[in-house]
Image 1 (spheres, helix red, strand yellow):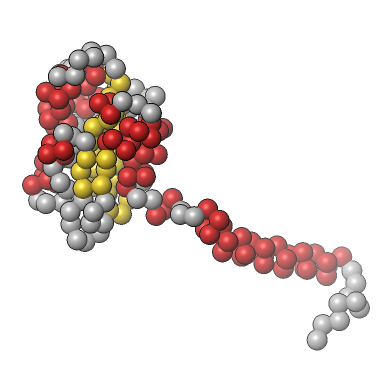
Image 2 (image 1 turned 60 degrees about the vertical axis):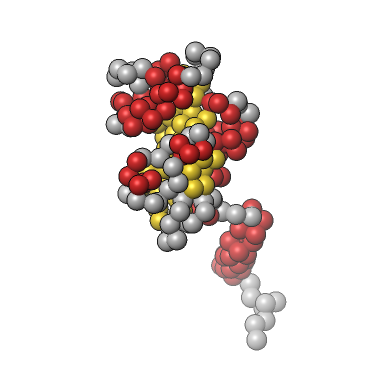
Length: 184
């Protein structure tokens, strides 16, 4: 069909190299997901929360969110799992959910689990993001504008966790609070 021995010249070898590069990239595109395992697009909410917390633990007072995540029935955010992955005390990580997401049956009430876990309860998948703020306990209990929750219109978190955080014996240590929010 093709007699490659008779083909000469610089243009022909360049064309062969181009075809080889395209084939190599196509194979790489097929093999990479198998080599890597799971892609970041398919992260579970718990894994995404863990990754977010790792990047946030040393950033005091700043609010960050995961990319949009697809929650399915049974997906959960667990504070003890996140704390263990961060190598911090379990009393330093909490989970909150806005009241309307609990009352409409979307998420379980984290107060029932000591603000340590919430589970997505709907049978239909939905898009949410997970937010996190890490800061010193004293700032999180402050009712003024220094409180990062009040500054970011998330005062419901401070109100719900005030008694829980206030009861902790240590006065000045870092606390991280994670919360799901609708993705827009």
